[in-house]
Image 1 (tube, rainbow, N blue to C red):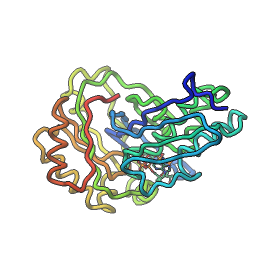
Image 2: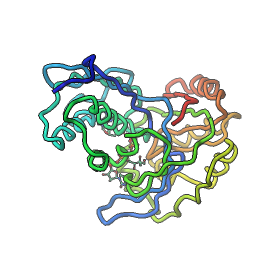
Image 3: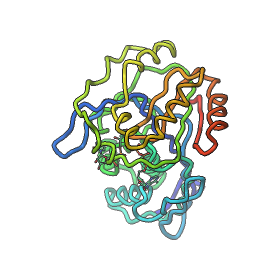
Amino acid sequence: MSDLSMSGSAGEFARAKVNLALHITGRRDDGYHLLDSLVVFPAIGDRLHAEAADGLSLTITGPFAVGLAPNSDNLVLKAIRSLATACGQPEPRLALTLEKNLPVASGIGGGSADAAAVLRLARNIAGMTLPTLELERLALQLGADVPVCLDQCAVRLKGIGESLSHLPRLPDFGIVLVNPRVAVSTPAIFKGLENRNNSCLPEIPAGFETLTSLISYLEDTRNDMQATAERLCPVISQVLAALSAEPQTLLSRMSGSGATCFALCRSGDEDGLAARIQKSHPAWWVASSNSVT
Ligand SMILES: C[C@](O)(CO)[C@H](O)COP(=O)(O)OP(=O)(O)OC[C@H]1O[C@@H](n2ccc(N)nc2=O)[C@H](O)[C@@H]1O
Ligand SMILES: Nc1ncnc2c1ncn2[C@@H]1O[C@H](COP(=O)(O)OP(=O)(O)OP(=O)(O)O)[C@@H](O)[C@H]1O
């Protein structure tokens, strides 16, 4: 079972997930936290490629391949194996290649994006499709961030990640992502939170007509994981200071559980802003995009 369309191969782009706002509004009995978050997907990400082969394999290339084993713990293999089991199919015979461009354990859901990418890619394999609700359930079992990565479009995310609702069309903007190359453990930040019962997001307007209206909305929101992450990983404060010092930055904040932070700017300003941050901090990972879904 490896009929990846007519050509026997297929590819998927696994975009980074950015939490523009992330409020922690409570905790379930099983310990998982309830979130209220605005999530977007810039055109910065990993690339997944699949070729028909004799068996299932995973090769990892790219700048962040080091330190990420291509073994059965990898979310790409976990996702394709869980899908095959759910579909009552044998393991698909695929040579998978993951070009790992996103830093690992960095608050932008790289592993979740990869898992979602392989689930999308499997649509090209006979017998490997599930009804949408079952696919979303399987995605959530792989990780709280996997369901939102399936469609890669701007949404409001609630619950632990299973409740997704579309946002009004967002205005054009540029985004710069900066990671100080320090891995941050998501469970450690959740565990270190001092307050788990914060307000939900302010009411979302019918439309964000201008970038100014989006920024002014976001200014009334927060990332409730940021203070804990800055305490446990102080370099995050340096990243935020560097981003907010740039005159073109309209808003800067941390994404997810960190350490990646972002700056929003006018579309067209993102490459210059990114270049200046990279020049002053050559050791940091910096990426920019003005195409955000
Ligand atoms: C913080 C976010 O990045 C915001 O988008 C996500 O909620 C994290 O999602 P994720 O990395 O896919 O998380 P998972 O791999 O499912 O969970 C890792 C660990 O984080 C904690 N966790 C995760 C999600 C959530 N809503 N509440 C939690 O408390 C749990 O201890 C869990 O064992
Ligand atoms: N394909 C993958 N890419 C990245 N990490 C993976 C992958 N497969 C498994 N992992 C493991 O998942 C853990 C979380 O990695 P990931 O890069 O998804 O974190 P993150 O960006 O902080 O995610 P989130 O924002 O959803 O919390 C890492 O410890 C890593 O070892």
